[in-house]
Image 1 (cartoon, rainbow, N blue to C red):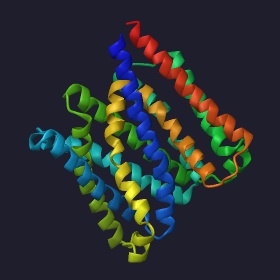
Image 2: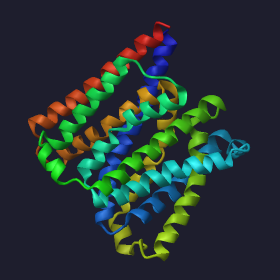
Image 3: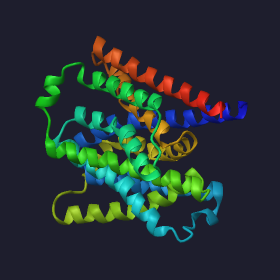
Image 4: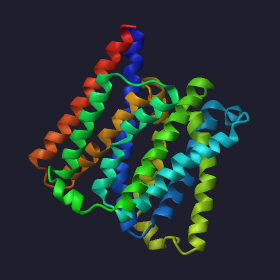
Length: 309
């Protein structure tokens, strides 16, 4: 029982590292885009460098043998494309039509989408306590993002942008399910799954970026934009490594319980906003507290449920 508890704490730490990485990633992405790097090339730069970095770590830790696909190259490419290319391209394009508020709320739908996907594929419906924690966390996120003013949220909506953002979130849910399957079924490490899927997914990112450039939908950033966004690019490349901790945490806690942590991403951005001098209302504070309570309750229930089996 003690070993199980220690493992749960470790998996929880993995997901908290991921959440923190994603939380600082969004402000960095926003600043880079506003500095003149479009979404196509921002994704291109991040994952070409990020995939190289993850692959280097894999070779150092697990050796050359671990970089073999063992006949699963197509699967790794397909789901790497869905996860890395799909999430980033659709998010950057969708947020241009919609709003940051909608993007964050739709991202918070990830636990619910994961629950639906898992229920369909595994015929495994989560119990009522997990469902209630997911709903409670989502309510908290809505309060944080909208500040209780739902009229402004509805007025700024864009159906096309919201569909693209929903598709982006769905892409990551599908990738997460695949990565968890590779780890549990084939006994691959989270590092190996991340390195191989991101490396093959990058091929699609490169192709899509070049096609977008050919049709003048994207353009290479200027040297000034690259210099201005140097620190942002550094953050984006480094945070690409948190996919390793994401896959490891999801494997340990399960997709539905693990993905619940994604609700903390807007909270991290919320905290960064405080540091930057943004005024924080009472409603936003209450929403952040509700989200954290939901995560803690679900984690306590999960550990109690596992230790009793």
